[in-house]
Length: 246
Image 1 (cartoon, rainbow, N blue to C red):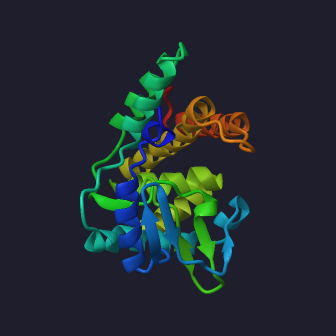
Image 2: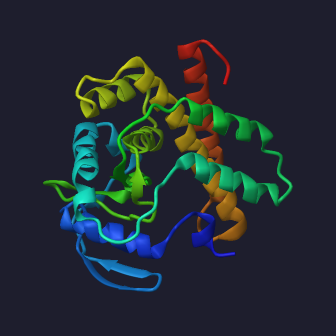
């Protein structure tokens, strides 16, 4: 079973979204591709670390808003939707084949999905790890569009928060800036639920990767443990804020 299939990666779609990102001047130019190979222009800059995320929050959100506002105008060809709850259920199904009991996670996935508020469909990045953001000293670039496709803004925002290890104040500032002060209580609740889903996705990604991919020099167990901790923290924060158990 291929690792690309396990992780919902479609190379043709990645190429189409990468071209759109380049035309929107959000990502470097695509210079060559074939099959599973894609080459982009080199950017003289530094990839971000987790420590860079909070100090650059407004710059990151401005880039993400640009993605959501403009990418669809440049996109051509067949592009699917990214829906994290489907990805999570598929991961659980694969892990069940390894006789792992994930029934509690299955219930949680459905609960988090039901808490989502309807939002406009946009083109999103959906894999906003710090290393996928490059700072050239003047501006930010996004790279690695493996999961790029249609979706809602909520996952990209939750993804930034989960991968930046943001606290409640950071989240509040981010939502205020992105939604320009129009972030209602149901919208914030939807975000808090999606933040849990984002961390669960990383946790289950590590579980799947350890079994199907197992690349050398990658500590999948450590990644799983870290995002299990983050998902538990996000669950605890949610339950305290809203007064009920997920």
